Length: 134
Image 1 (cartoon, rainbow, N blue to C red):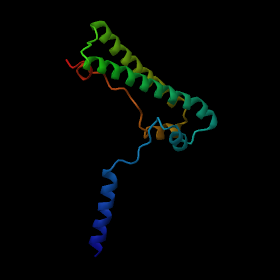
Image 2 (image 1 turned 90 degrees about the vertical axis):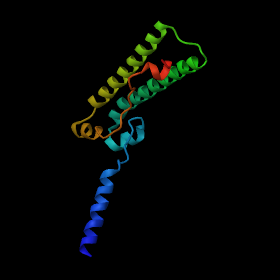
Image 3 (image 1 turned 180 degrees about the vertical axis):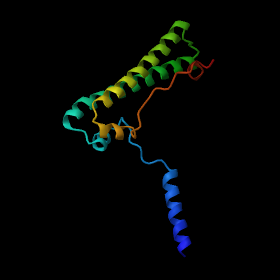
Image 4 (image 1 turned 90 degrees about the horizontal axis):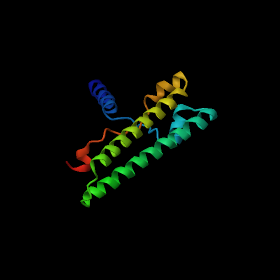
């Protein structure tokens, strides 16, 4: 009987370790504010930066979907336009990284430790095959 109880406890522990905990997304301002226990001053600084990140992500998604739609309709962008799309995407990815760094700069030491557990958005490198099909 004792072995069964020990085995049951071990199984519970392993199951909890095997499944990811509910990650908090940086884009969920209310949960971030609560999780990091931000001060009102920090909230005034950090929340607008989170909104900027959301705007950048939406802008990038819109641009990429418009290009994909054009390619689908046999309106292939020119060489320089492709380069412009790639550079724009890279610039937006860099802006997001910079904003995340700025957010972290406004946290105290304990908040920085907890900030590591927050899921941060990122723009993955753009592969031309995903958009332009070649």
